[in-house]
Length: 283
Image 1 (cartoon, one colour):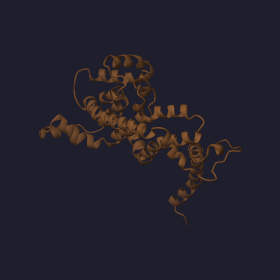
Image 2 (cartoon, helix red, strand yellow; image 1 turned 120 degrees about the horizontal axis):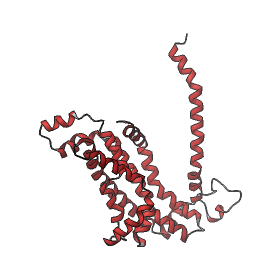
Image 3 (cartoon, rainbow, N blue to C red; image 1 turned 90 degrees about the vertical axis):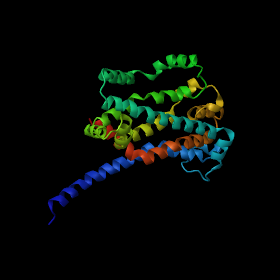
Image 4 (cartoon, one colour; image 1 turned 30 degrees about the vertical axis):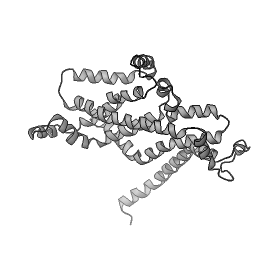
């Protein structure tokens, strides 16, 4: 005789099978552009124009990747993007915990008003700030340098601050009081007690900083003038303009440029989704 738990499990199997089947089909559909990009990157110029199109090239032409890097300084562009990513992540990890700790754990007059004002900046479209920021950086002689792309991260991103504040508010205040009784300073409480408990929002900060910086196109295009300083996002646009008919080389370059994003998301997906759910829903 089947017990009630086994019977309930058997009743759920058809529903789960349908769910997994639908999710698998959707995953394949969303993977089609990436698979087509991979297929095109391994074709010759004549195979790209063939009709009907072939998904699998007769002979994979891996030389396209070497030709793309030989004809264009893609390695330099990716290095520039990596430098910007590292500096922006460092700026976010320095500024966001300090600002969030002040809003979440310290007592000061006007804190609530300042927090609301900080959140209100998230409602301002980024395009509106481009001209004032350009004038500001131009007056400081910082155009055609990386400073306009790095400095904002050292002053805190409102989205990251909001997540961090919400998470810090869930940590019991008794930990702070016990640490102060033992003689711990404010900085010790932040870096030795609070931050080790804030791994979910810190993970979100690191991953999102990486994605936003690596994919950013408009800001490097506006602030940078020297060709050798362009990140990969801008470099690919110029690559397409110069080699517009060589789609196999462009697809190879594009696939290489998104490889770091896919790798980071693959390894950080569990922490990213869990961090957003935990940091966003608590408090």
